[in-house]
Amino acid sequence: MANSALLRRPRLRRPRWGWAAAVWRPALLLVAVLAVWKAVTALGLVESYLVPAPMDTWHRFADNAGYLWDASLVTTAETLAGFAAAVVLGLLAALLMAYAPALEKTVYPVLVFAQVVPKIAVAPLFVVWLGFGFSPKVLMAAFIAFFPVVVAGFTGLKSIDPDLIELSATMNATRLQAFVRFRFPAALPFIMSGLKVAVTLAVTGAVVGEFVGADSGLGYVIVEATGNVDTAMLYAALILLSLIGVVLFMLVELAERLLMPWHSSRRQPGDTTAT
Image (cartoon, rainbow, N blue to C red; front, side, top):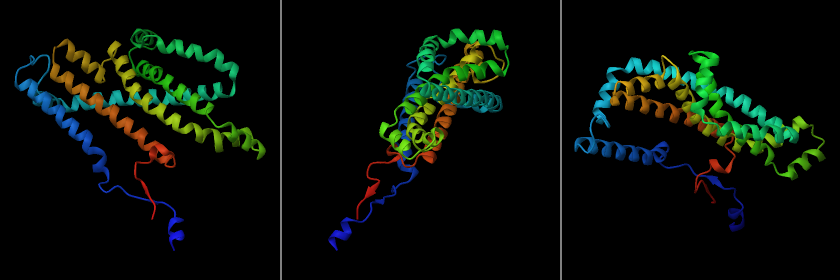
């Protein structure tokens, strides 16, 4: 009886508090930040034109909800389009470099060089080439998000255990079959980590493009509010940008959970118990 009990398979233990256990710490930190923000402005430690009161920011947001909503949609669309382009092109470049060492030695240094170029200096070139429309913001978002995708994808594809490659060879697997069954699943944790970084950088890229030349979007709202010394509107736009980044990050996190529930990074301490 004792031996049979020891041989029982581990049983997954469900968290007691569900989603509340995961959000109470960030929520508590947010409340603390709001309390400090309220205290700083209420005590007059800084001028209101530098740091507006939380309620002033809320009122400015409520009074301009439609305008800010439309601007948020523009920035989100630019971000998603740029992120999608970065994912497709970045993973393609990573795949080509992983299977062609000569291409890796040629292209990788160029990618590193492009990454260290100040992005704000490149944005005006995109505006000159493509005008003031949607395209330069998408290109800027893709340009900034591209490098993390390439690095993560290339690292993941090259990190596969050589024993798995030998195993696929002994099984007479084709290169495509070896990629689908072994190399890509091994690279997936690296790729998803790169995507989580890239999606937040894509938001930055879209806003940088709007800073240089735009008549809509949250970046334009920030530029306009700065020119008018309207810090309440500026803070409202910054908070919306942060929310967009957080939501997109959480969506990639959700995709990671769905694509690789088997990975050790998805397990929480104490998830298994032996009975």
